[in-house]
Image (tube, rainbow, N blue to C red; front, side, top):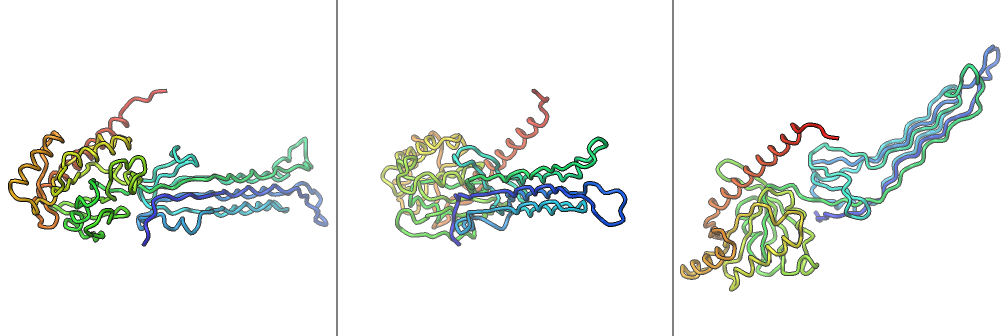
Amino acid sequence: MQFLDLAKVYIRSGAGGNGCVSFRKEKFIEFGGPNGGDGGDGGDVIAEAVNNLNTLIDFRYQQHFFAKNGQPGMGNQRTGANGKDIILRVPVGTEILEEDEETVIADLTEEGQRVVLAKGGNGGFGNLHFKSSTNQAPRRANPGQPAVERTLWLRLKLIADAGLLGLPNAGKSTFLAATSNARPKIADYPFTTLHPNLGVVGIDGHEFVMADIPGLIEGAHEGKGIGDRFLGHVERCAVLLHLVDGTSETVAEDYATIIHELEMYGGHLADKPRVLALNKVDALTPEERAEKHAELQEAAGQRPFQISGVAGEGIPEVLRAVRAQIVRGRKAEAAAEDDDEDAPWQP
C-alpha cells in the first residue's frame, strides 16, 4: 500500500430544497387553502476518524465530494426529502486545514470522532407555513439555502508513543525491525526509508508504538534531502529516541545537526524529552567506544546509551528508558487536562 500523508480535497454540501406554493382544489371540499410543503435540508459533508486506515492514499484518486441537495416541497403538505450526507473516512491522527494550509479546522485524534466540514442548506418554507388569520391565502414560499463549497487540506500525523530520529543510515530502521514486528526496508545506503513506519515494541510485559521517519540531513528545514515534511509524524510522540551512528567520524556534529533541524522546525519539537543512544557500537573497538561515548556525552550534556540494533546489545536498557519517559509524559498530559477542566470559567 502506498503511503500518502497530505491530500487536497474539494467539498460541497447540499443545497436546501425550495418551498412549494400550492392550494387545495379538491371537489366537494368546502374549505380550501394553502397546502404547499417545505423543502428538504441539504446533506452535510462530514469527516470521521476510523482505525483501519493509516494513509490518505484514497484521496489521491478522488478529490471531489458533493453531498446531495434537498428535494423541493410539494402540494398536499408534503415536505421534500433531505439530501444524503457524505462522509470522508480518514485515519486517526488526521488534521483538517483551510486552503491556506495553516488554519486548523479539526484534529481527529480518536476513533469515531466526527466533524461537520460543510453544513447543508436549510429547506425553504412552503406557503402553508405563512398561513395566518390575517393571511389565509399566502402566495409566497422561501427558496432553500445555497450549498457551501470549500477547499481543504488533509494532513496525517501518525499516532505513536515514541519517535526515532537520526541522520540517514543511523540505524533507525534496523532498530525498529529488531525491537518490533515491523519490517521496514533496510539497506547500506542513505534514505532507505522513504515514508514513516510504525512498530509495536514490547518491554517487560508492556507495549508502546514507535515511529520511524526518514533521516534528516543538514538543511532539511530548507527542503534539502527529503526535507522535514515527515517530522509532523513525531509531533504527537511523548519521547524522541535520537540515534547517532557510532561509526561516524563526527558524532558530535551529527548530534548537533539533528538538534538544529528540530529547532528550525519549531512546534516545540526540540523541547520534547529525548533519549540519546550511540548506535552500531558492535563495530567499534573498546577504545573507539570510549572515545565516541565521551565525545557525544560532552556535546549533548547527557549520558548516551551504547546500543547495537544488529547485535541486540543495550536494547532492553534503552527501551526501558523510553517507556519511562512515555509514562511520565502521559501522566503530565493527563494532569494538564484535569487542571483545564477544574479551572473556573472566565469570560
